[in-house]
Length: 452
Image (cartoon, rainbow, N blue to C red; front, top):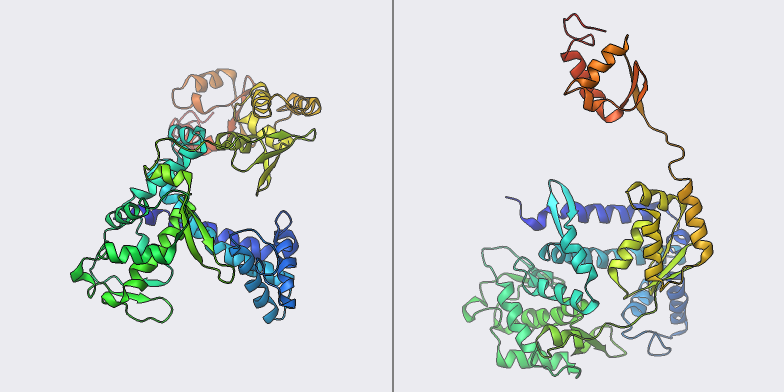
């Protein structure tokens, strides 16, 4: 029996393969055309003068990415190359993070029943997806948080980077472990900074066996990922349970908006955390969800370039992606409505008045007249010319054609008539109609009398 998580392996493999092919195909300048790699590369050059981010000059907080950028910069120059190698090395590093995000995203989407497998295809469940997209951001995040909390198939211990686990018959209970740790996290006052090390020490003193019962410390085969050393016995609690606590607080809980992290300037690892307003709501410490931020409406330029701020309504961005072509992501998501994207939209049965009404709503009725004029011009020429691939079926008399159209099996396969004795047959129906015509002795291939 194939486990549900294994069914998504082709999606992950395809994602990684596509990223690698893009990196191998395009030069560095094209890969970073809409990104900010050049900005971080220029900042990393300060390290040649002994200057580091956040210590000697300001960078965003927490400064994880700037420090990673400096490390990649040093490695690129160790290899004797510059910006081009930096871009590809940084791309590989980000691919590792993005792949982990994709795996967790697929797990959460399946738990929320937003996606499912139909044969070998991954399909959206439309009602559930629409409901989630239309929810406000705090409740969207709450749904993801609850999906992670209640997922028995997501084993956090197996994702701790410093550990390597061996399947030797022992089994842990990720749900029970997660519930115990969340109870301890819920004891932290919302908004107050808590030292990560002091929190771990407190858990060790109050509830050391939150994951392993006393008789299991010598039966779980866990190794240190770097040295390969077996971490069996209570004396390795800090390197197993302690590492799991650090991973959960700085990993899933941080990714899902439950915790914010604090860092010491000279280290790239988190040293403190605090509960966010959304985290306090998730843990039941407050009764009211935090208010969603009020953002400016989506902006549409006269040339049909569309800009939407990150953190805005996801349902509107989902609809926007249906009618426009993606250009860039970041603090601002940029799209462009083109003749091609509008034709694709209209071919799906979406009318121009629906497109216009959507754009007027999301822009606060600030749609430029020039943009409206351009859309009407493109829509007016939609489907004026149509090129199709088809066959022509010809009969000797019009009576035979009438008989074929009246036939219960052959008639539905026929296309638009060209004349009383000629009609189109769509490419997808070729084999089926040939088989039917042969079965009825209208075509050679069987012994019969009708071959007309």
